[in-house]
Image (cartoon, rainbow, N blue to C red; front, side):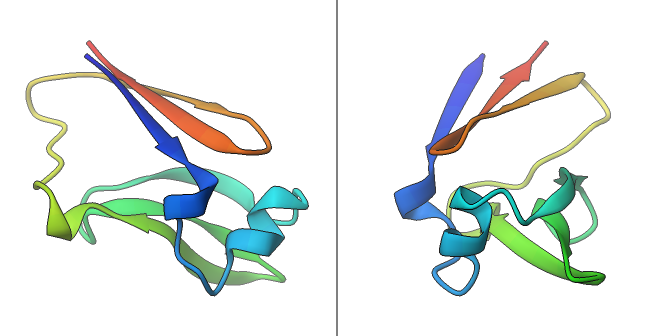
Length: 76
């Protein structure tokens, strides 16, 4: 399954920082059910899946691909 998250749907508080490439170390955070990264040394939520579903790494692997305007997630 391939999931495409557009930056317009990201956390509004950090959307601009993401588009400017300032968010580092982006990855899936299963405990908090979202995509998290670091901005100026502080952990920030890029996208929260809680409104849609619960992410789980027990049954699939995940590959994140980043672009300026989106993050694609391939579950396999």
